[in-house]
Length: 341
Image 1 (cartoon, rainbow, N blue to C red):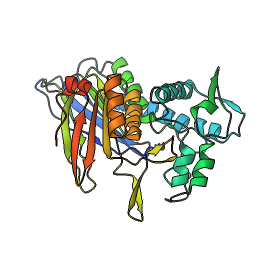
Image 2: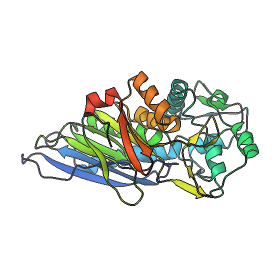
Image 3: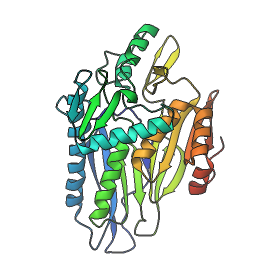
Image 4: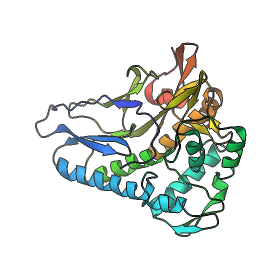
């Protein structure tokens, strides 16, 4: 399975497969490839919990269906067929696509357009998209022309159909993995799993505790390209965590760095000091989308927006050759003070 997933795997599960204190309960795990990356599930087995093979089958069925619906890397997916339509056309699409388009529009409206599900032509133009022709710096004219083919205002839902006014393309990269985390988590719970840690391409959600009473712990990675190191470690129960960063997927031209995160309002990669944004939310989809929103906004606007909206957010900001961290009051209430060096 492969979606257009550009977000780096920044939040890392620290939970290990340990034998619990109780013979009837233990942590088990499974995982595999998905969305051009990987997924993993850790869960506490015990009375009333299905066998690992059953849970893995159910999980992979969800991921396979999402791939069929949302992948921009396969020509036979539902969204690929819609993307191939010319302007002024409509296509009947699955409920999941309509739900994600509606969720994306809400996030776009909340953030004054910082998130836009229709930026794929711009990603391709800069060489980051599934149909890009290699990394390049386009001129202002190319950017202006391409921007005429993006914007939620040109996309609408009519009953079970999705319609476009211009020849735009929809890419769910900014919310698909978080949505997948929500679906898998809900399925596990419906099957009787009370304690789990689900990770899909770096998006995480956890609930409950391990057999010895210990919480599920995850590390927010430091924005380093040379090695993986923890910036902050938090206990997770009932929340999803999403981290977006600009330091794993970029290119350089003439000494300037170009990030894969595109600002829909300029048509160009972001250009600010914010290196990494982590968001917690009960919804994996919202956490996923909001972490992208904050990366587009940058450190000052993003922090003000998150504080105003009561979003639990943790930001890592470049300061010369070092990094500083800032967190919102909502994040501090959940996980402890996050400001520092």
